[in-house]
Amino acid sequence: WKQTEQVGRGAGPAVVCGKPRQVRLKRTAERGRTTMGTKVWALLTVDLGEKSSWTSHVASRDGRARLPLLVFFRGQRVSAMRDEALRVLTALYEAVAAVAPRWEVVPLFEFCGWSRQTIVERFNVDSFEEVRPECDQRELSPEWKSRLLPLCTVEPEVEGCSTSYSPMDEVCVGGTFDRLHAGHRLLLSATVAVCDKTIFFGITADVLLAKKKNRELLEPYEVRKGCVEDFIRAMNPNLKVASGELGLHDPGAVTSASMDGIVVSRETVAGAKSINDEREKANYKALVVIPVNLVGATSQEGDAKKLSSSDLRQMDSVSQARGAKGESAP
Image (cartoon, rainbow, N blue to C red):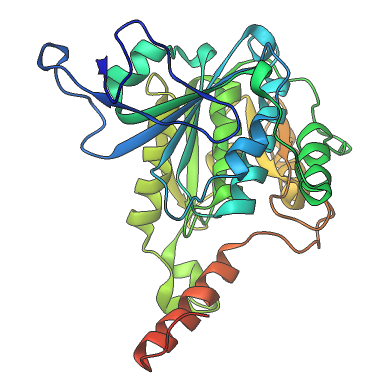
């Protein structure tokens, strides 16, 4: 790769300082083709060894108009215990939800084998920026400070759940995953962060969604499955991935003796505890239960208003109705 747009061969990435300056990249012929197809990405590098308000830089972007974003986290801070990585991911997706809930943002960690070189070899990166602590002079409004910073650094404890996570061989996660959004991506990225070998993900079967509101707008099972698998493989292509339909048979979380952990949202912790009750009956080891925050939520209570696929479908329904009438969006 070589840098263009008035950036010399030895220059580094554009530094996020005040108004970010983007650097466009041009792939040279001898580097060969990337392995992630023709999708074009932007890349933001964050050094977690330095204090910076990187979440404000993510939130200041217009996700509706920007390219899909890769966020590369460097530094030893998240390498030893993965619970620190989960806090970073919580911060990331709260910022994303504040901009555009369905914005495609993929976090990349060094412990998954990523470096800047491997990223540009695998992805079609169009531009990249780097957050530097010495440039961290951006003024945040009181609203941003209250929304981003506390929610990013403090996670409420949940009884019966692990608060310290070491890498595990086999981890499972499940959901409907319609209209993949920031909440889904937090759940999935947390699963990737704590897994070293195989992820088992379950997708709710179509036949169980017949009573969902705006059912006709639900994405088919195969589409939802493909989106989840693509996200996992983008974040860590070294993992093995297995999937299945939820609701038609007993889930692998119950039937697999070798499963180590399960990642759930805070509103579904009770379901994970029920799974462990079933595993105990079969004399299987209990799963490590890893809860992640509700994204875009008014609180972390189970009945709190939060980002949801149901609301996104309703927005799409209203938009389609306006389009049919020839009305423009407000």
